[in-house]
Image (cartoon, rainbow, N blue to C red):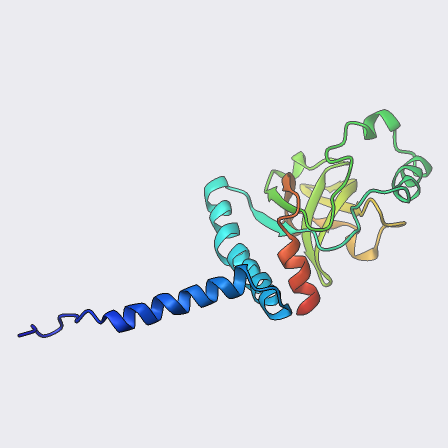
Length: 199
């Protein structure tokens, strides 16, 4: 006689669960359809956003992780004008610029990690992450201003022709951190997901 609460092993039920899991696996990894690709992208996005990225933040001490979803930091032939010519026109020293981090910019689909550092350790040429009314901004610091004990930063996307009004005099408290690492391609699920479901 079965004791109360004892589980009865049902081979048919176990087989049914196993069969269902195989169908899901086949749908996600082997089937070539719009539905399977869409489901895969959504699952990858959810796992990255709610499991992988928070885990990395916890282990590493980074302050934020973000996917690059715009081309404002991308370098190509046009960037000679929007980046180097702009810098020269605005009086930046060429030898100083050559020592800036991430001088080749960022590509759409890169994932970047930023770390909160003291305000005085964010310098001209560093790449920072902050959030504005238009969402996340990952741009390079062009000017640093100190008023009393407070720091303010003005940024510009390397590929942008000018500084936008929303990136002028950003207070330190709104800066999520300074770019310390990047991984190419890992951000593509978010890029694709943001096109499917704009937010």
